[in-house]
Image 1 (cartoon, rainbow, N blue to C red):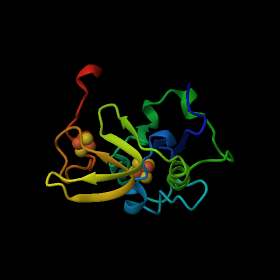
Image 2 (spheres, helix red, strand yellow; image 1 turned 90 degrees about the horizontal axis):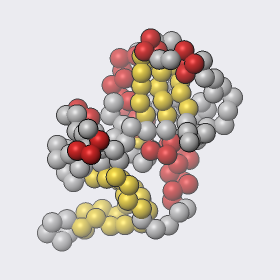
Image 3 (cartoon, rainbow, N blue to C red; image 1 turned 30 degrees about the vertical axis):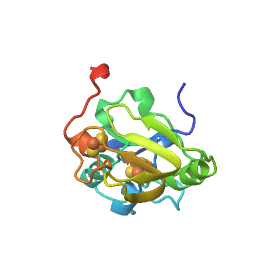
Length: 166
Ligand code: SF4
Ligand code: FES
């Protein structure tokens, strides 16, 4: 069943889809484009904040596909008509707080993407050194990341596909 927290935002040309359940609070979206993605504001996505080209560029960097986009011309008219205005919405910030209060580490393998680990955990390097103490992060599964062992979104650029999803 579709998550009732999912939202969509349009500027007339493209629609950006927001799936809170996939957000790992990597902060990429608001570090790169606060004019559009601002978790302190409601609605947290302002499609008038930047040109379409720039919005697409930043959405494509979301490591877990919590954010995705489509040209309106390619969308089903019924989907286009969905109106979320005025509905309460969650943001990457509220997701972070929610997850923090949940305790143990959980591991999710994202389809065609990274391994996402959430909760309380430490990362130990190949030489036994402690790399990071974190609440959540995504680890590269495609082998192409430029900041190993972490996912940097390269899997999307290189078209990484799970062998069982072909
Ligand atoms: S996972 Fe995606 S939506 Fe969540 S903060 Fe990172 S870039 Fe934004
Ligand atoms: S899985 Fe994202 S860069 Fe490899």
